[in-house]
Image (cartoon, rainbow, N blue to C red; front, side):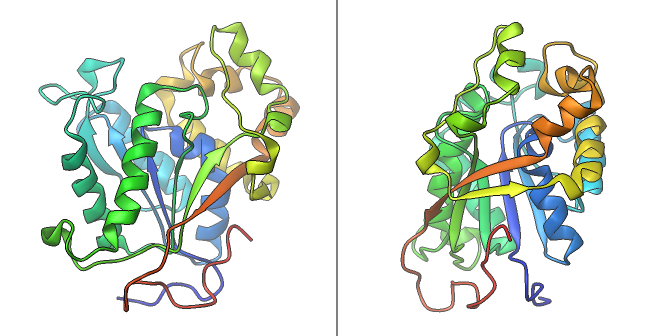
Length: 265
C-alpha cells in the first residue's frame, strides 16, 4: 500500500445518508484531499443502484473522496430507498458493525469522522444509529479476536464527531425551525476543533448541489441552502465543528505512524 501523505491524516467518513458527508465535513475532506491525503466515505443507507447513489458519486468526486461505499440499508423514513433490505435502525447491530469494521480495516484511516451522539444536525434516527455503529466499529477494528474474517486489525488514532456548539447554531437554527426541524447542538466546551473551510467552499458547495434530488426539496437542508442569498449560505457553510474521541491504546502494528495525525490543521 502506498504510504499516506506525510502532513495530513487519512480520513474515513461514516455517515447515514448521501449528502451528510457534503453538508457536515465537506470542507475538511476537500482540504485534506487537496493536500494529498487519502479520504473516503462509507454511507450506511440507500441502495447502490439508487438515484441517490449516482448523486453521491458526483459529490465524492467534487470532494476528492473516491467512489461510494454504501452498506445499502433502508432509510428509516424512506423504505423504498433499499427495496428488500431492512431499515438501518432494524438491522442487527453486530452485523452492521462487522461491515464497518471491514471498511476500516481495508482503508486503514488515521481518523474516522461520523455524526455526534445527538444525530447531528436534526437528530434523525439513522444519524443516531450510525454514530453508535461507527463508534463500536472503530474500537472493534483494532481487536484481532473481533470479526477475524474482516481483515487484519487496524486502530484509527481518533474518532471525530461532526457537530455544532450552542454558540455556533447561528442562522441555521431558525432556518430549520421554519420547516419544523430542530438543530441539536452541544456545549461549547465539547468542541475540540473549529475549522474555517471558506477556502474550500467551492468544492463543498459543488458536492452539496450534486445531491440534486435533495436540493430540489424545500424542506431538506440542501434545498434550504440553495434558496438562500449567497452571502448567508457562505456564512453557514464556512465553519465546521468537531469533537474528538480518543480510541485508547493500540496493539503493535495497528496504529498509524507518529506525526501524521494532526486534525484538522
